[in-house]
Length: 132
Image (cartoon, rainbow, N blue to C red):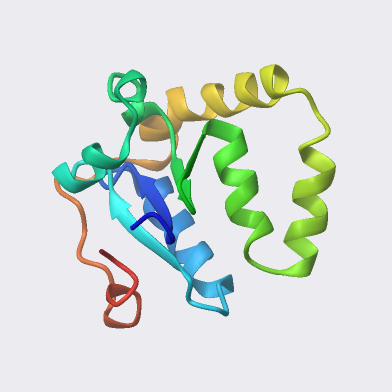
């Protein structure tokens, strides 16, 4: 799995599930895979220091490197298309501490604003092949 690009996300978060569909739609290379953080295999990919905080952050496992919070989201976007790559590069100029404050504010309120599922929803058939 070291050579793969894997998005680890909160599988019961409605916002996160919609974001996964967005990533799938714009990932023309089909080289980004998905795994809910609730999956015990996802936990094995995380460094020990992340396991306590993993549900508050999307995690992007990219060719052996782990990105979290705003950096993870922006690196995923960079891997989608030229337009998103340009936008991501511009946003990456903003200091991480500022980006992560905004990210954490949204993460803290995501269930209230967007909803939460009781279980991880089953992805549509086209998207299923990208799940590990």
